[in-house]
Image 1 (cartoon, helix red, strand yellow):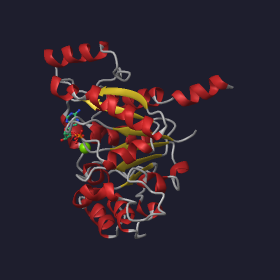
Image 2 (cartoon, rainbow, N blue to C red):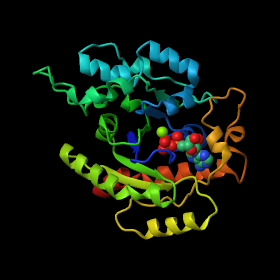
Image 3 (cartoon, helix red, strand yellow):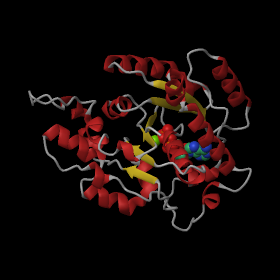
Length: 295
Ligand SMILES: Nc1ncnc2c1ncn2[C@@H]1O[C@H](COP(=O)(O)OP(=O)(O)O)[C@@H](O)[C@H]1O
Ligand SMILES: [Mg+2]
């Protein structure tokens, strides 16, 4: 299959971008029968995805060696050439050491240069690189090795998120089903549409995932309102409930050795995430369908 690159994005923090990027990646790579090859990319200076997927020690080692997206942006800014995407990608990610799950980590140092990223390419009159084209310049070297590339973003539309959108086929918006979390979704949709038009490409709204649902009236009401609302991406049928297991999955815990230990057994979060991954494959299939139509 051709590689599908998908961004998990929205302007709100705490809604599950990181948790769902990781869980969907892990289920695609080890629980679905196809055992897809998955690369997760952490574009957030908070590094939650990185530390969850490889643990503090491995992350620190990668950071010290300049094998993170911080170094990638730093090189673009200062015209150095330290970053090598092939060396930076960590294989066998997750505490379960999942062979098909790989990670390109982030660094907290990204925070220090975030404000300067708009200067990329400014001093070099022959440079073809733009601030939003840095990831693209490196990702093409490895892209074909993967079935899915999933990119976790910070809760804003800054340069790292725009780099992620620039290399993607489409996006997923995770949200908690409450008023505050869903409030900014139309703005995100408009922003992404305008940005993708400026690049001359189309970014597909693959889906809206409700996460951290609680059994309360507010959450059911918001789900109903958002499902009927025009302009939203397609709504995922699979809804992820608020479950302690999912919060715990963020810890890189070597004592947890099976996926059912990690996410809970039958009828718990494991089943939901399995369905979510299946629906994810289904909802992001469009290009293959379109190509088949064209033939
Ligand atoms: N379905 C869930 N049930 C319980 N806790 C969750 C769930 N999804 C996410 N969390 C927790 O909520 C917090 C925010 O999630 P996170 O994925 O970091 O959000 P974001 O990346 O959008 O900021 C984290 O502590 C995470 O472990
Ligand atoms: Mg996050």
